Image (cartoon, rainbow, N blue to C red):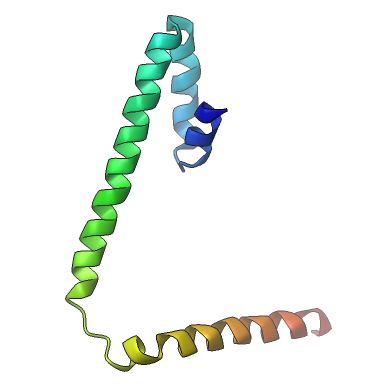
Amino acid sequence: MALMLILGSSPMIEGIPAFFAASKYGVRQLAIMVVVFAASTIATYVALVLVGREGLSRVNLGPVERYGEVLSGLVIAAIGVVFLIWPAI
């Protein structure tokens, strides 16, 4: 179950055959692959978040920062209206 959750949480669908191929070498080899894959996935996510956060901290969006919640609410409401009308078109 844990292996499926790890694989399912990642967009790397092409890696699944590698796990099936490693299963013939035993549980130890498979466990090593799972740990390495999980650690590299987590490290990649953390690195991308930190780099993105640093980059966004240098950008001043002015009014968007103050009214961002209102703008996102308006966008969501507009999408709702479009899909409410869509079947009528």
